[in-house]
Length: 76
Image (cartoon, rainbow, N blue to C red; front, side):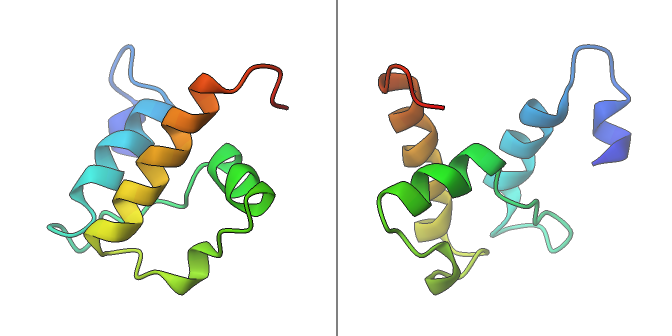
């Protein structure tokens, strides 16, 4: 993660998205879900620990929660 964030314009969120998509294919790609993802999952009573973090289902849930956040107004 540190090596990726050293590139100009690449921050922690971009790094997280990049590594999230690589989880099933690259052993070292296993970033923690973003804090906002955990918060939204908790709000909707989605237990992220129930899913294999290296599985496609987890990646889709995580991406869906991020899209949901964008649609939600005033979510803090």
